[in-house]
Length: 60
Image 1: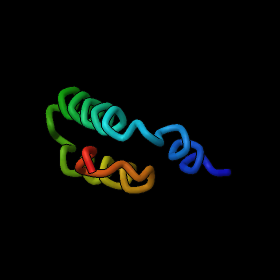
Image 2: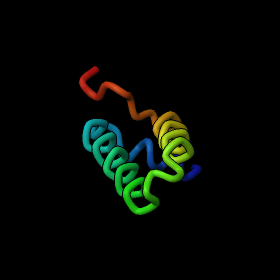
Image 3: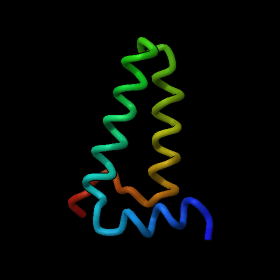
């Protein structure tokens, strides 16, 4: 079982909290880098969320 499979399993039923944590991490990185890498950070966040199955709308 890969790391993303294990993470998906752990996040089942906790999509809203996972999305909030992902957004908070993105904000923290952007704050610490002065938004210098905001585009790359956003792309990375989207890829991780896609791999983990974190939906853009956690209420679905």
